Amino acid sequence: MKRFYLSLISCAVFLFLTAGTAFAGRAAVIFIEMEHEDSDTQALEEITMVYITTARLKKCYDRMYWLVNTSATKDGLIETMQTALNSHDNIDAYIIGHGGMQFFWCHFDDRFYVDDIIGLHSLDNSEHLRFVYIGSCHSWDVTDEFIEAGAVSAIGSNIKMSNFPFYPNFLYYFGTAGYSLAVSLNLSQIPLVDDFRIRGSKKLRMKTEQ
Amino acid sequence: MKSSTITAVIALVVLLATVALYRQFISGNQDGIEPGQESQYMFVSAGNEKMTDDETVSGSEADSSSATGNTERAQATARAMKELKEKMADDGVDFAAAMNTIEQKLGNSPDGKLSEEEIISVLPPEHAGELLKIINQMYYPGTINTEEDQR
Image (cartoon, rainbow over all chains, first blue to last red; front, side, top):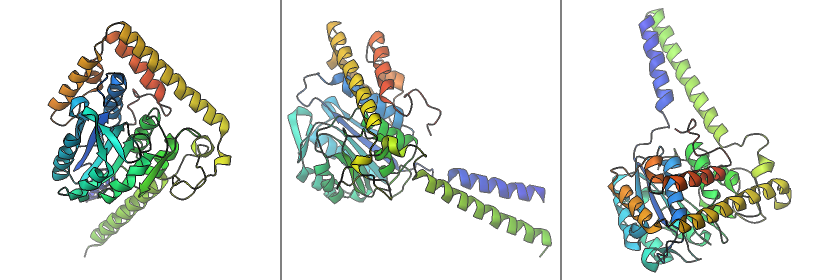
């Protein structure tokens, strides 16, 4: 009988440890293009972004798709999104770069416009898109297009911005600590400096499944 | 049915119910903020859409001294980054080559995951150390080398 009780307790402990923490089917598409004119003036910032993103997120995702330097092109982003959407149930995108109210910059001095963002909705399995972080100036204005494209939540800045130190802090609270988007955003903002906002669900967390 | 079997079934039900309640408790607490953090971090200007799950704080309630401290820290970090870039340029570091190397490494990784050492190694060691110091300054919750709370 003791063995029976021990088996029951073991099962309960196993369920406790595994329920809600499974990361199966989660991938991140990371797009970093901070020098679209290929001037090498922001290379150190780009390397820093790769380092920070890796350190904070690699344990949160099964697969990380990177678009940096010459691979951070408009076509590359669309193709990579399709690849990720086809192979994983939950896709988060982290877009770090320069931008304006209707676009963000890609490599080769190309622009990813709001129409291109809405076009992501036509990709197969676009319902797998879950969350998008857009770290560029005035990126709040393109968050609604990402929602229209199928994302549950999107974060952007309402003003000119810097990803430092908001982005590292946000990854810590959202990725490592597991807080909801709303709490992660509030804990990461520098008062009177940052003005990041959430479009869509504010309660989404890293462990939330689609 | 034996009484021991009934007891075992009841024990299982109670155990599972306890686990479910505990998980719900933990889940609910993750939406909250530690006591004392509200005035330090929360600032919401009138009319915008960033907020906690349930409440907002007006701009006038923000802790201005904390805001000043955080801003100064961010500015100091930006200055340090600029100085490092100038130093690296003076030392003839090939930034384009570093970016090509990191792009190649990321492209060759089957799951897109490199170690932090593999990433930072695209820079000369003396500059890599300086960059790591700056990266750690950016982390208000703790340095990036603090891995004990990583899942």
